[in-house]
Image 1 (cartoon, rainbow, N blue to C red):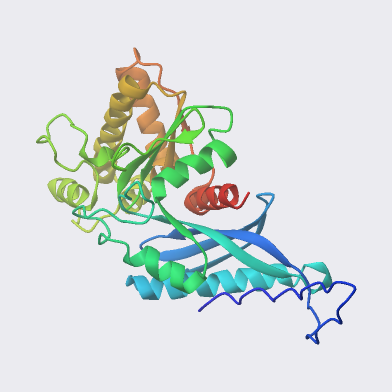
Image 2 (cartoon, one colour):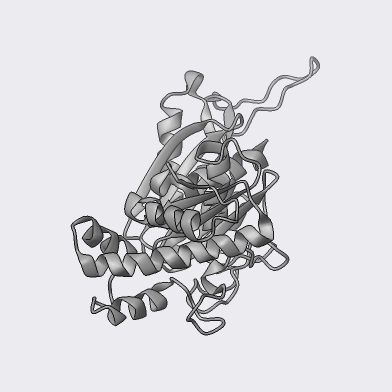
Length: 324
């Protein structure tokens, strides 16, 4: 569903001509930008004004994964958010959408339009970005979701007092977002932060560390269902399940080793653990392992306070910057 175009502004006549007949101007349009989180199980949007202030939010779950369906869902949420803002504007002013930043669980090429074809990620190409441009009627930048979550931590979360932050997000996948001197570090080809393929003790070089396939193998090895999720393992650990706690120990060890590897290369001020890694049962294990086993490294770890909002808040921040 397209965002309604801004009402045309009547031309100002000079003193020698009579003004042409026009319909009454319902009010000036205010420029806004849109942050979007296109996750595997939901779509979220956040509308910001030219000052960067968050004006409205909307969310929808169970969205089909085809790019046109996702684009229609985003456009519908953008319209709902715009109508919410317009209801609070004075003088019948309208919302004009000028830019959107969209976070996706994929490797994004440096052009901010193409998704790279990487096994286990979204289908490559520009299909999603193109569908979003058509549906929203404004320029759209696509960004890796964990990069946006890291940016949100610097501006809204645990990393507000730090200039260099690495955010490690563990949920349906495992990835890192890197912010150095206040700017997202994406790497030459957009591959910076793909920590799920960092070497780990006991695993073959290049093996995934904590993605869905790795987690299924780890759960099966300990007698748990291969369909177990990180969140489910944390739940069972919190309920006193000793087997789940053993699996969680291994997960925490792998997260900690990944953090230690990044610390040796990047030496950030802070590591922020997000999504399921922010839950105390897992966060505390990671922090304890780093403190007791790798104490020589000055690694500081904090849990994200943003919950599931990190991606959409980071997207809204970048969209607001583009608008300004």
